[in-house]
Length: 603
Image (tube, rainbow, N blue to C red):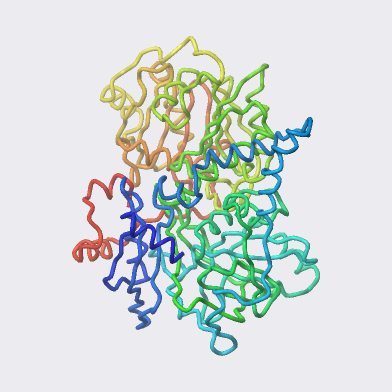
């Protein structure tokens, strides 16, 4: 990490903040604003403080390590597409024919030896300073409180290392960790994750589970922790493949977990499977707070670190954030592996304002009727792709999937309710829109065919259409039509919701001559002139089985759900920065953005 920061400083990509900045809200708010800028930089806070606890921390804090595409590419050492090409070559490697082919294969096979972790006998740099027993104190670490309604301070860039009960499998995951005191951390590993599967093994055996959390080191470690590898594959194998060198591991001092020797900070401990503690709420990467729920708790047995460590943190919330760039790397590198399940897949893309698992665009080569629907089922049935809520497939002639305006026009000209698939499957544990946790509706659009023949029968301008709608329900407050040049214009209305939106849909059916796709959002939180954040809101708030109607035109209810809708779960708030903290940061010159910027991203 230290050498990486030195490089960024030489290249002018590091912003150093030497003024004291509070780990409660201030630091996260600065990072949250910075990474949304088109020229965002990695941040290094040299004087972190906790004013409430009266602490001045001796170690700096680094945030927004994945600051932009260029910086992320440098972390990988080359463009992610080049790494994907190497993976694809290995996947299609054939037995060599003849002596010369065998010789040409040797360098590739020789390079593969670098993927395997190397266990060192001596202590690592991460174990230069050791605290055990009564000396363990998590307050010595500048752990951030990110959002006003968070349940407390959270470690947000922790590399969580675990192992199966029999020791045959290891896992590196990226899970948030709530600090409960000087020696306790909440373990937010969700039910679908490998660490949670290991936890089940220890619980059934009635044994405590060893866990080690690492912070810092090579920035590539944390990316590997969120990579969607197959079950049972140790994520540091991916590190070795990308880096072309063996990960160098040392054994934790108080358990049998092995961790990279060059990380900055190590927190060792064990989890008692018989104890669960309420964790949260926490402002998460969906842009909403995840609710309070019981999770396992880790009792810390040791904290070790380098003599001059750097604490790494991130902020998650509404897009765009650094997970945009981490997700870009994941998307590109894992394309060849996804093609093994869907061989006619040409490309795919997960827009960051679709919160990645809430919206995926796929380009494919179709060979028969229903091919795209087959792909939908394949996506919803494989690994972490099974969490995807909304999948849109286009043919090989479609524009680039990241050319949003062009591909949107292409989709809308081919959108036909007959080619819409609504089904049910598992959803991410963080999804708040489904009627029950972990299971919800899924929406698939097959737009691989030709243009539809019919468009809107009579297109009205925004003012006349709003007048017609308000005559039916005056609680419709604003309206904006998008893509009116396509066969399926999208009409977005904001609504002061006083009744179930499905009843509103009943009343609006008479306007079918003027509408093709209608989207309803709450007036209080949305701007119908802000398509970027509207995509974010709709992708989050829809449950396709409940909220999508296809006849006589497509209608989508993207409002917050409550008892009016028969919704019995608690609907969380979306995250927002503390206005007083933002104002203080402005006055001190630590952020420099205007109100238009803050409104654009609903900061």
